[in-house]
Length: 250
Image (cartoon, rainbow, N blue to C red):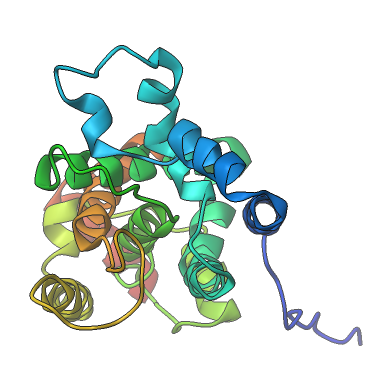
């Protein structure tokens, strides 16, 4: 009788590994640059709200566009990268397995851009650059919430649980947000970020503080836009959800 295949201890999708390697290489290259060259990198690739003031917009058309995403590949320190990579492995991995590489990278770009937009709306005219992938990672957290907790027969936050949810249709957002586990997760997540906003002294991201508004922008984008990227058929009504859960219980 063949032995059941064991899940590898480190079962990280290749796209997650690739993103992590790119972020580490970018940081390594920046550490070798002098102050002037590194300032040029920040001006070209970090997200700077002041760039979008009427007096300056259009002066650097390329960075005006690509910095909505490119800032996510820049970090303030190795510790900053390490924390982001831990969260990206935890929440990005199930999303990457479900979406596939192309959809996952598009989701990364959209949630990163949403984080930048939220930061721009709350930091207009600011010259301090925004760096870090946490806006996109917040989007991964929201994306995982859309299908992991609410799947029928949810088997927990582990390889078996994730493998089960990979094949399950996602319920409508209104149904997902009635699940007590989802409500608890989202409530704690928002409380932590609001706590950061009122002065909880942890981490550095923009100007020596965590850019919590970018987190919220990425999270809301991931929560609302998840169906646009999900390749599995959706459950579109409460009746669909009831039939699906009844079938799982049967």
